[in-house]
Image: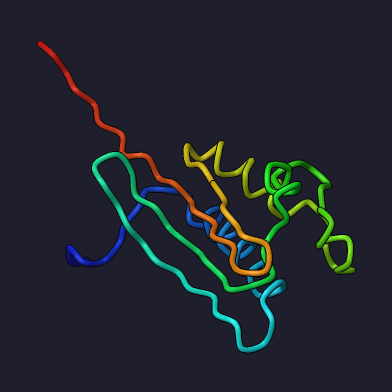
Length: 126
C-alpha cells in the first residue's frame, strides 16, 4: 500500500455495511442523471469518508431525526422501501466501532454523509 491509498482501522464487514447503506440511500433518493460521489480526506484530528449525492435532500425538520430508530421522515414515507432502520443501524455501528457519522443536506439539492475516523494518539510520559 502506498502513501496515496486511504487507510483506516475498522471492522471491514460492518464498515462495509455502513457504506452500503449510505450509498443505497443516495441512489434511492437521487434521480436519473444525478451524481453520487465518494471522497476521502484527513486532517490532524481525523480521517473522513464523504459520500455526497445530488438527490432530493432532507427537509430541515427531518435532518436532526434521521438516525432515530424507525424514522422515515416526510420524504421517506412517500418511498415504499423506506424502513427507518438502515441509518439507525449505521449510526449504532459507527459508535460501536469508535467512529461517527454526520450528515448535512439541503432540500432539493444534495445530501452529504461523512463517516469520521478519529486519529487516536497515545502519548506516554515517563
